[in-house]
Image (cartoon, rainbow, N blue to C red; front, side, top):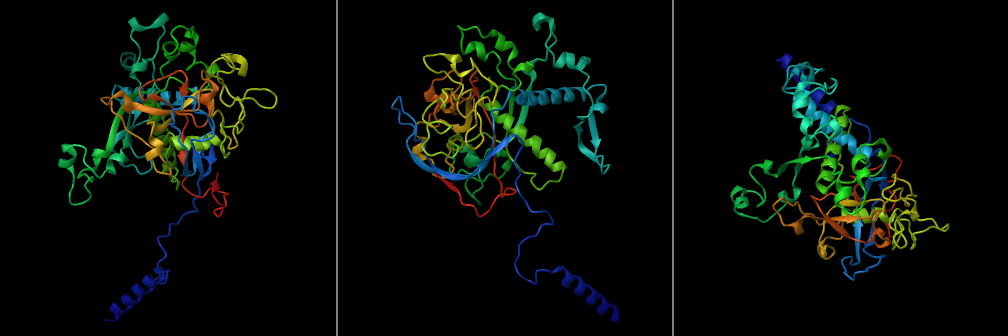
Length: 451
């Protein structure tokens, strides 16, 4: 009995010591430093705010597809320049190397390219992972047969990687389908769980989509976009030559741009997870049409161009973007076709080339009337088009104008579109990262920007 009383007293002491909140509701406390969202490398912070979307520019065609609408947009980070050849090349090389390592991991020297157990705990993995420390044997017979062009297809007898083999397999979650409340077809109705919400499937894996896409840019875009123009040298050199490292990547369709964002997300999250960083869940994606216009305005009200003024020249008579000025004098602005990114001054938020150089893909699907039915907070119309869908459903909004466009297409309100499976020599892209919380040094009481 005496031992039982002592044991009860010890337990009571431990329980009382563990209950530090004195019975009050204080929430779950994590033993970690205060969270903040640091500036991602190469990105600029765009604050939240409200603005009148679709005003300040011209409507030459009287199409009325940019009807004025006051909207509000959340904060985000945006790439200060378009994605360059050198940056996109990292993506292509990663896909190339991962395919090569996978091929070699199935050959004679498989153990050199596989990690079978956790180096920290010694526990064996259920499935071995690729070893990225081992140098690739590019002269191996396995790669010669599986990844390089056969002798009969080589130009000038050069040994080259078969770009058709550079397939990136990735997964993404169709949140639009998961949030749907109605059934599209009988298959939806059959798989639905009536015990919960109508759109809730018994197996959530149906919302996880698996896509495979060739990541190599269409280097022939320079020729097929302008068949009666001599652009052959750019076709051969533009993407791979070091002289064009810091030029915007082109020949990338919307599907490839989205795949790049997913790869970039996985690349950063893998690093943050290895560092046990609190910000281990982050995302890169294409900007919505509304986010792009808000970022392009740079905080200026009713401005037709990203630099804020109504003219395409500064006070010294110098053009402020790379486009088709005057009556087709391409070189009057300092460039014949694309130019190195950041060649012209940035807008007031530090973003370069929001007008000219190359037009940019957005996340939004194109509909002439989307301003009328989208919400006024973070508006976006999106549609995940399939290969079997009609062409009209594959239209994606393109903004910003390019080196081959007149000044009208440089205006922040001008809407254009291209098909998501089409690559052009005048369309590139940049990524954004949603803002997750208080930034280090920010004043949390600071009012939102309203224009």
